[in-house]
Length: 165
Length: 432
Image 1 (cartoon, rainbow over the protein chains, first blue to last red):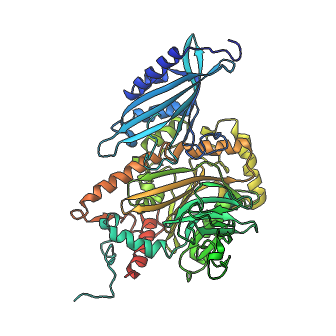
Image 2: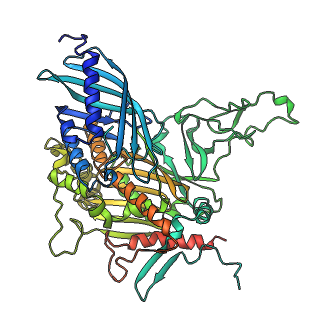
Image 3: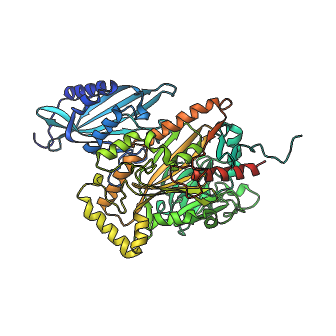
């Protein structure tokens, strides 16, 4: 694929987003990991520096693949108190767009609304947009870089980001 | 007969030296009256953290934040001086600076158009001739807080004009702030960009306790311990030691309600103790940082700086965690049952890109709303708060660990927590 060409259709990218949302909402985290490239990373920038670089800016989450694997181990552990019992989440993914390729990376964009419910806690709504980079592994689209950017001015009443955005 | 001189806040902290027990009434975590009392007895009379000099590099740089319940502009004037001004127009009160941060040539009140210089003095008043005499530019400027002082670039304000000076107030805490700043070859640390701001639905004093309570580590942070183990960090508790953690740390009273843990490090330090989590590539670099420390401070002092982890509470609501990274964490009660937390990362100004990236990576391993530990702390605190709904039925919290010991209190005892509560009691009981 040459520079600047569109390397995936929107329908294909939407399928990936919807599959991912289904896996995450159902806490099928091992299956979700299969959607990641071997060297995938996951970022949630701080609310006051949404365009920051995690090497110079304190993020909310900046996982390389090693720590992301550990995060999944943690999320599956009943000792992950913040997510035990696991939150009920429902993700709505919209406004999906596919950008022009950068080498073998395919930038994709989407808006998200994630409703999160826990017993004896107020419902929390996480609103923002995704700025991911995908790549093809054996023909299938995989996440190379996942970036979830929240719209809230500060986390405030959203509290912790203890589940996957 | 009712003693009119007695404060309403007597008897909240109970210390029994014959039974060796220390208890705190759960009412202090739920009562709106106690909360109102704290605003006066603590937040209007103690030195309260505002910000760090590094956040205001250039003349005109400002940050707006809520400090001790007041809207504050933390700003460096064109004269280079750092000020904390009340962010409220002297005319009719509107907020004159509504941005989070920036560089200001002036502050503009959008209500009637008064403008102020970055040093707070009045710049212009529309239709000034309607007043009997010209506006006194200095007198009618944005109100500065009564007292503002700093220790090694950490700025604190005080609403009590008669308070002792900051350094006297900080007492033994200064030595622990020194251990933080000595990590920089020039003694200059900086707040790194990116702010973590989140609410906890729990009383603010629970976060004071939690920040220095090493007793909770193994239970609350089981998944973090597991992560450390998976990364090759030795998390074993020495056999027959009676220890709950890999090394024996201390809990210390620093005077005036300040307290700290002081623990031999086992979990790595960017300055300067390598662990496998950093990767083989980082070894030589961390050795070099260590070498600079030894050259500058000598072997003994370098080891003091680089081989101990310290979680410091500056009474009442500032925490500096100097561990796997350095965090500056400030929290303020919104009500008796809710607090807002603001946290930053701090690092030496001289750090290279690789060193800075390593520091930030290490920070997120444990700390913050997306870290491997903090969300579980939040859950623990909110869970305790939920339990206090029954404060009339189950009246007391217990903080007696280590009471019977004559020697030094360990970090998993509660001696250092009792330090906080004694100071809290003394200030609250003076309140009428």
